[in-house]
Length: 361
Ligand code: IPM
Ligand code: MG
Image 1 (tube, helix red, strand yellow):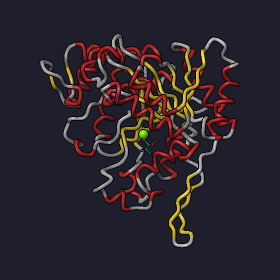
Image 2 (tube, helix red, strand yellow; image 1 turned 90 degrees about the vertical axis):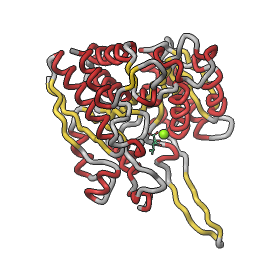
Image 3 (cartoon, helix red, strand yellow; image 1 turned 90 degrees about the horizontal axis):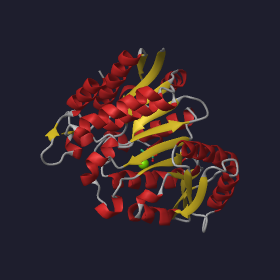
């Protein structure tokens, strides 16, 4: 079978990590008899430099026509890069928001897993993490504050800025369904996170999630306020299976969730909509400070490619094979700089990709 993958290398370490993910996909293809055709697409700073905008209509169309999109990372150093002198709607991150909206990708899944081999990198006390943890943050991605009406004005000489947090019940229902579906494939527990003690949008969120829960009697639903959730993530991360939440809360909580694993270089993500088309990218950023130095950890991107096989192509066995190869490489003591500890073997971006490919053969 042939799969058309739109590939967005992006900025910073993006191109290097995407190269390794393609290498691994090709190795899987060879082993299981699939062919992956790649079409390169510009987005973010790379697109600004070439075309003046962070995402062209043509680039979006190429992604729409593909079977899945694999993304490295976009953006540069916000203090020094000329991209950040441009108006906000022309900066690299605007490309990311435009592609999410343009492809209708309203569901963002970010796994937070404590890899047993990397337990020492976890910043939490060992008694908190004993036995490991494995949960996902399911974040609404195309609504809320990110896409609400906003403006800045001066009223009677006083500067004022407005952002609006809007959700309608349909937007809440469709992401809630995703949350319950994913929970069904995991440990069947959804924790819906909101700020219902203050916000109307959260009160609607809570009510609609409860309605959806009635369709999933086999899945247990609980509610949690977002400030409490931020605390519980460091107090007892093992309690979570699926955290279901709106866009802004999910942005913040997913960074926290990745940090408590101690290895942001290992965490993948998938953004999905109604159909099979998805966008797959590492949870980390473009790390411009180490770009082009063969230092970046490609594992998050390779795991994102595995998610692509699982969610867009229904190739579960192939995805399992990639994950197993990564575990084998870690068990053999190979590490990139970000996850290195004493007595193990440090390797670069390219070597890490090669090692994973070797174990897939
Ligand atoms: C993320 C990022 C983006 C977001 C930024 C780069 C716009 O932080 O994917 O979490 O806030 O969604
Ligand atoms: Mg974020």
